[in-house]
Length: 442
Ligand SMILES: C[S@@+](CC[C@H](N)C(=O)[O-])C[C@H]1O[C@@H](n2cnc3c(N)ncnc32)[C@H](O)[C@@H]1O
Image (tube, rainbow, N blue to C red; front, side, top):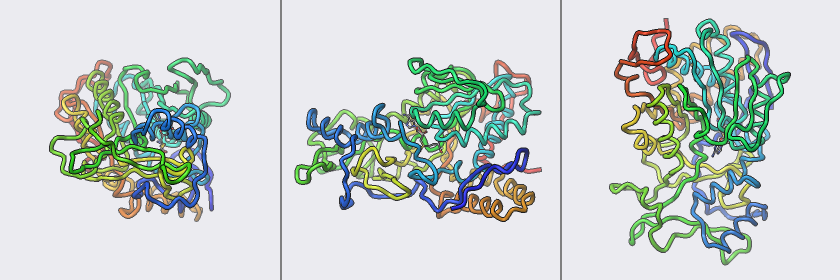
């Protein structure tokens, strides 16, 4: 295993990345029916068994929420699950080019919408802070373009462990962090490039100012309800204690209609569906904010356009993992239904995509950026890492086809007539949105 370190600063700064034969979470796995060779009784399993025995079977959404974000035992709360020693790998951890191109996307949208004198960059579920670090490096390199703009960073993160890692990745050590566990802004500091940075547990608490929002592999960890079509109509999937095997959970079907069944579309043609109401709430909040103040949201995740059925799966130690075994020790995820996100945004803002990651990154100029980095690097290990990262991100058999980009924009952005309150450029613009159409490189 070779781990590459930062080899400098400036345009050729090659950020530390691992050459990874590890698993990415877009992989598909039919879950819940693997043989239980090893089913350790984790504290989370004990908690869930107690809960189910006391109050009855729980929905898959409640199971996901408990397992992932329970404040005392949740998988995300105290784990660093990303990278070589973790459970899975994500695009920003694979190649610095990914974050650099997303940074360029935000700056390009900021320019296309009139170069406001201030904006907030808000990231939902920032992991280890790697993606934001790469975006901030681009902002520093384009300092002459952004020089009169007041930027602030706002991270929405429920994980205590990951927020600490984000702080050490992004902030200036010499400036002590302000902490207040009881406040909606539970941590505050200054980034290495001197930008104010704040942490929240909930998007609702982020100031409603002109903002660019980013969510990479965030929506797929939000809890889903699962439904099965039966001769009696739609029935929700629940999780119950297995009466045959001690300390084992199993899937069961609700005997009658449950309230969440209302989320299923009347014209649904699939026989199994997953619905994520929390994703709907967040998309509505983002849409209201963007409609009110301007800005944009860029959402990248694996998913489908309302076509897939059972996508609920688990990951542990870079291997697929039965979702009901040893809860709390493995990541749980379900593909994002972009058709649902689009429905939730409809009327308030315009949406673009989903488009495949390989198309988006190609349109953003990944080939040009790769060539620049390769041309300037003599170090074989750095070149190998750059090429490996490119292949992981772009290869349709790897992450290129499974991952998608989706954007929310004010209606005026697509039809012209943008008018920002705080702009220093008055001419409205309806230029093509980068990434979603080819950029003309000059
Ligand atoms: C799969 S990781 C992705 C991390 C990062 N975006 C990346 O691509 O490397 C999911 C992230 O979302 C955070 N998260 C999970 N549930 C959350 C919630 N309900 N609210 C805020 N953050 C959450 C996790 O702690 C983690 O930072």
